[in-house]
Amino acid sequence: MADLLANAFGAINLDLAPRVSVVVPTRGTKPAQLDRALHSVLAQTLPPYEIIVVVDGDAQKAASIRPPPGPCKVAVLALGQPSNGRPGLVRNRGCGAARGDWVAFLDDDDEWAPDKLRRQLEAMRGDGTRFCCTAAVGTAVPCRRRLVLSDIMQHNCVVCSSVVVCMTVLRNAQFFGDEPYGQDWRCWQRCLQHTDGSYLPDALVRLNDDASDLDRSTVRAEGRQALRAAIGETAPAALAAQFAGFM
Image (cartoon, rainbow, N blue to C red; front, side):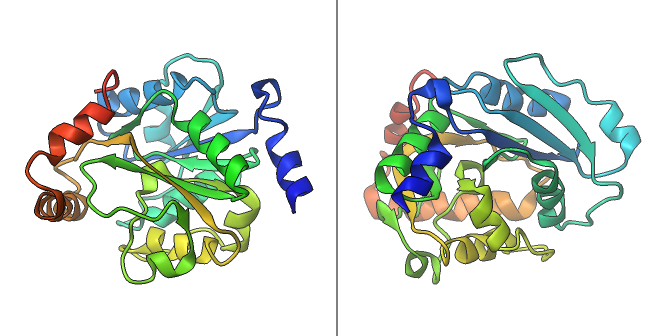
């Protein structure tokens, strides 16, 4: 297993860095928001191998998207028809086109800290894991440093926009389901049947609530309330300090 992991990672001599495909689902209706997300990926200290933007709609809508230039290829794909509120279908379209050995996910209204990918890949190499997630500004539920399946059976402490996972693990987990809610949680559960995970407690993702995404905004609001109840009203400032230079 150690040899397989070493081969998958190259040598984190970052000249032989792992190939990471970043999947960014979008409705394509808020170009400034998408542009912000993409710039945060292109600014990574360890650039990804490719970025795959998947538009929840038809080819005409996808053709209107003009991604910013950067150090890696940015492909824009169309789902072909609206997902009707089933985000797993959109992510699966991107996973199916990915050529990397690792897949990272970023919702189009979120953004990454510049060293996110580097730190996650280094953590997985050190831990011997093939799944990694991090804290995010505004999230409430901490995970253990070594994440196992039982940790996410009762609640989902995994922020989708923070996940990096080995493509082999994701294939074995059969990607995402087509449920309107909870499909990401179920996918992480299946992934952790094939590997342990690494959790980084630093907030390396900023969640920018989109008012049009009522379900997600509601979940995050509830999460913030739980966080304040657990560790006090100073929590938002403390989280913001972890995100210094990125906000």
